[in-house]
Each structure stands twice: as structure tokens, then as C-alpha cells.
Length: 191
Image (cartoon, rainbow, N blue to C red; front, top):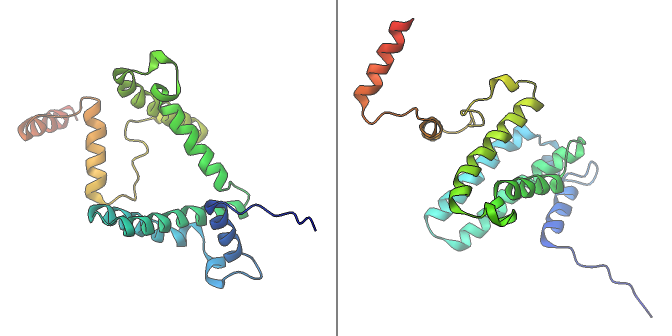
């Protein structure tokens, strides 16, 4: 007897299948079926913090588990999007793969683009191009800023640090606090 064997699923395909089953309209889990992007978002943030905690504690077993929990969140969001016809997990993976290839011409590009100097300048230039493209897609290309894409949902201190690093890259930085107050007073006088 010649039976055809179906190939075993890859671990990621298996996870996607598990999520599809959990979200199945008739046979799935009631809790999983009723979830939305908004209701799952807090869990996604929590899992990201748990990944960070596992890294800080240098606990590789915990890190493996927490990375899996975070991956589940990505698969969950991707499944919700797939059900609404917006995108699927493969689209997410392709988008990030394409982005990383584009941001790393020193690895994937021509030999002339493989210097460290080229890379450091090109990374920021590419991110600027991506911000412009994103703004154009959303119809507000005139308002592209170095501060775009700094998530509003970040904790306040983390967001402040990220904003500070962004503006420092364009020369908006002072060596000491007195210079800041001088500049503020100068700006007030102009009003």
C-alpha cells in the first residue's frame, strides 16, 4: 500500500494553525474569538516587557518562553487582520524582511555600499525616506518630521529619551542647561 504522507508543519505554520483554530467562528475559543486589535494590544505590550525582563535576568529558558508569548501576539494580530482581509502573517514577515534588506545595503547591496561609514549615514537616510513614503501614503507629505514614528504609547521617560536622541541627530542639543534657558528666552522674545 502506497500512502502519501503529508509533510509536517513548520513550527510557525503550526502556531498559525493553532491560532486559526482558536479563532474559528464555530469551534474556536469564545475568549479568543471576541478579541480585537485593541483588546489584545495591552497583552502585546506586557509580553514585550516580559521579554525585556527575561533578557535583564539572563534567563535563557524564560527568554525562549517570553519570545514565544510575544510571537503569539504577532500571530494573533495577524490573524485578526487576515479575518478582516487587511493582511496576514506572511505579509508581516515579508514587510519586515524587505525593510531589513533595504536598510542594510552594506550586507545585501553592492560592494561599494559595504563600508561602515556608508552604513551609518545610509541607515538614517533610509529611515527618512520611509517616513516620507509613509506620510505620502497617509496624505500628509508636507509635515514629515524627524520626530515622526516615535510612538505615543511609549512610557513617558522612554519617549522623551527617544525624542531627545532624534533631535540631537539634527543638531538640536546643548552642552549645558543654561544654554537651553537662553534659547527658550530668545524664542519667547521673538513672540
